[in-house]
Structures are given as structure tokens and as C-alpha cells.
Picture 1: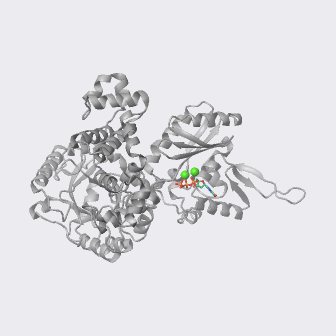
Picture 2: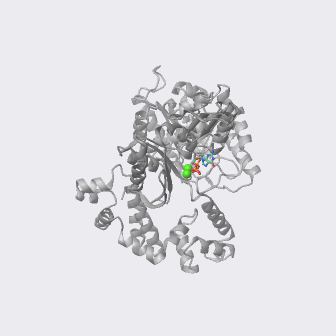
Picture 3: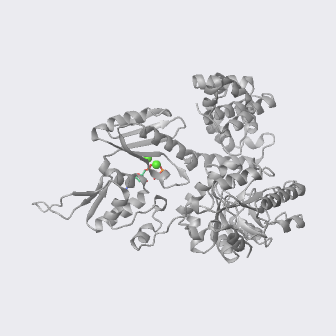
Length: 598
Ligand code: DGT
Ligand code: CA
Ligand code: CA
């Protein structure tokens, strides 16, 4: 078992214990252990193998939890977990997986109405039984119904960040087999879609006779739960996580054509195939065929032209290679025909991350740790943007904390020679820190803008919606425009749709209006890189570029490691046709500051 599986087991034990009415500290112990294990840099399996005693020195792991970890590493299961699951059933975990239902509500529903499945939950909500329970009302009942619908709609698609490591593990597993000449993942994952339905893998054997060995080896991938279909060149399996993976084995000479075919999108394939027909060629997953020769009966003879690489494949129909992130029939074919394909922005083009959280706010890492990680990733500038007040809740705005934070940033900048006086440009070895603040937008669009003396010290402000997600479109649009206009330092709109993938739909908002407003006021829409947000969406990014609105890709990192999420934001930017020149945070820091402050 890997850390993720052990952490999930502890999480489920904690949740089920809470429903069971266990002592709060016991529940917390499991929940904390789960969280700590998720954040561990090393595999428990390896720590345990190297030195079993070390397990207990990990944060939050006492003797009892150590024994359970050992049990899982030895046997692959935890009996206590199974016992709880037997008592309450998996259905209760499904109930818990619905947004807005935590263990407390699940316990209430279970004990009062015997709800232990999504089905029963939905029935109880539809027959208005939920709203009669203590601390529940019609509003929260309606919210639960909405959440159940979203859950049903999305739960079968993986986040890109969940799909990618699984596919990489499968690819690595297949590469180890000596009979494999080529292997690659394809499908929506290769196009970097925000969510992925299944994992499409493509392999080519060294010799055609080796296909069977590849299929057999695929089935031995350790995370395969069951094989649902298997033939001489195809195989489909279900993995432990519930995800499906489809393997196709093709000959080496067809690998590029098959990679193109299985990368999709389906509509892109159709567009390319139609174009090929117009120029007298036939394409399919095996290659490109010339049809100009005829046999003695006048029927076209298929002559194989090429198929081993995608580049040659596109070239054979007179097109340049189109990056997978663009293959969505959003104009890429016409652009390719006219030599006007965008050059997609790449991760190394970023100089700056304009939105990270520190341990002064919701983040886990210190500013110094964040700065080090940013430099290590090649960034030369980092804006710290914590949220201190969640707006409209009893205000927790902690002016002293912010003052302390700004002092620390000033000190670190001095230490790196970035005190504003020197002419040396900030670099990954001497990164510049910027001072920002993420303000939660009130329902009426106002911002909590006190205290004024601290506001003066900030370089710029970020605004974001953290609550009141269900306003009508006109109100939500007016709310965002009001917030963007509330103070001259407001420069960035973070998470413009306020969506959570697989959990919460975006707000109803006229995004065109917001984009035009930002274009007219030199404000920037964020492409948030958190894998469960990826917000702006690809099509909105494309629209923003067309309307000449400013854009930036930010990690919104909650710890130093999450700066790596920038890759997901960059992929989303690529899908929106963003080039280096379209993003604020590809500019050198001093130029960026100039653009931002002008
Ligand atoms: P997903 O899995 O729902 O996230 O999306 P995809 O795009 O990975 O779709 P999937 O797994 O059904 O199929 C993988 C690729 O195979 C798809 O992008 C294009 C290709 N493909 C599948 N079915 C057809 C088809 O009927 N016609 C054509 N031209 N291509 C197809
Ligand atoms: Ca797929
Ligand atoms: Ca598939």
C-alpha cells in the first residue's frame, strides 16, 4: 500500500468513528494522521523497511497507529477499517463524499433516518425529511440535492492530477518489459483536459509476435483490480481507484497514427480525416494511405505512406504538428493550414507566481520556505497573498499579523538585495517578494479594506469569491465588477468562476462582461493552477485573449511543494491558446511590476 491508500484508510476510519460517536480526540488522531501521511515526503513502505522504529517518530503516529500501518503494509488491509465498513457499509462513505455533508451531518442522517446510501439520501431530501432535522432547513436540504446531482454528474471523471501519476506508473511498468519498443499515454490526459474519463495507453512491440506478452504484462500492473476485456491487441482493466485503463497494442510503423487517433479529440480526428480525404489520402489508426493508384478494375489501391510518428503523420497531409492541448476543434485546423498555430506558453516561461499562501494565513510553509522553493523552480519573483478575513463572518482580520508579515517580506527582500534601490534584476538566486493580500468579496461586492496604513504598504490586491455562490447571474456579475472597482490596488481576480471540479459548479456570471471590464481597466484574470480548480477555463482563456484582457497563471499554493501545480495552470493556459506574451507573469519581475502598477 502506498501513502495515499494508507492516508485514505485512516481518513475513512476517522469519518466512520465520528459517525459512530467516538471520542473527539480519537477521531482527530486518525484525521491528523491521514493529513500528515499525505504530506510526507517519503513512502511509509520504505521508512518501515529501512527502520521500523522510525514510524513512531513521525508526527501524529503513536503505537496504535504504527501497528495499523504495519498491518496494512503486511497484509494490504486494516481489520479495524473493515469492521467499521461492515457495520456502516460503503454507502455511508458515498454519502460523506457529497459536498456539504461532513461526518456530523452524515451521523445525524444515519441515526435519525437510517440513511446509509446516496439513494436513501436523495429520497429523504426529495420527500423533505432532511429539512425537519435539527440544524437543517429547506435551504440546506436544497443545497444537498444540488450537491448529489453534481456528484452523480462528475464522480466518474478523474482530476488531471489524479490521472497523470496513474498513467505515468502504467507507462513505467510497461517500459520495463523488454518486448516493448514504444509506449505512451493518449486520450484526454495527453490533451491535458481538466478531468479525464479513462486512461488510454498505447504500446508497440519490438516484434509483432510480442503483442501478447505486452497484454499479459499490462494485466500484472500492481494496481489492477480486475480485467474487464482482453484480446490479442486490446485490453481494458479497472484499477484499485475505480479508474478504467484501455491498452492498445499496434505495430511500430503505426505508432504515430495510432497515437494521433487515440489522443483525439474525436472531433479533431474527424476534421483531419476529412481534410485528408480532400487531398486523396485515407487515414486511420494504422497510418496514412495513398489512394491515387488504381487496380485493373479501376478500384483505388491503398498504399501505406507513413505512420510511425505523429510529426510525419501530420506532414503527410500537409500540416504542421499540432500540439495535443490544441486538438479540440477550436480553430486549430484552420490555424495550422495558414501557418498561424499559437506557440503555447511553457512552464519555464514563467518568472513569477502572483498568488501563494503562507503560514501567516491558510498556508503551511513559511515565507522563507516558499521563496526557496520558488527559486528552485526557476522563478525570480513571488507574491505572498494570504487571506486574513473571510468577509462577512465575524471579522478576523488580524492587522498585527499582516504588519509582521510585511516586515518579514521587507527583511527578506533586503537580504536578497531587492530593496528597490539596487538596479540588479531579481533572479532565481535572488528572488523578489511582492506584498499582496487576497480579499474575500462580500455578497454586495464590497471589500474589507481596513486598515488603510497597511493597505499602503501592499503592492497590489487580489479579490476572490469565497461564499454566496448561488446569486443570480446579474447580481454575481455586478458583485464582481463592484469588487474589481473597489480600490485602485485591486489588480487580479482569482478563481473567476469559484468552481471546484467534481464538487461545485462555477457561479452564474457573465464572464464576457468581466473579461471586457478587466481589458478596459488593466486588470488580470487568474488561471488558478490548483488541480481541483483550473479556473479560468480553457475556453474563457481563449475569449480573454481575443478581448485583450490580461491573464496570469498562479499556483495559489498552500505549501512550498504546491508551487509544482503551476504546470497544471500552464497546461490549461495552453488549451486556451495562451502564448508567452499573453501572460503577465512571464515578464521579467521589474517589468511585470511596472505593468501591474501602471
Ligand atoms: P475521456 O476519456 O472521456 O476523458 O476522453 P477521451 O478523449 O480520452 O475519449 P476516449 O477514451 O473515449 O477515446 C480516446 C480517443 O480515441 C478519443 O479522444 C478519440 C479516439 N476515438 C474514440 N472513439 C472514436 C471514434 O468513434 N471516432 C474517432 N475518430 N475517434 C475516436
Ligand atoms: Ca480517455
Ligand atoms: Ca478510452
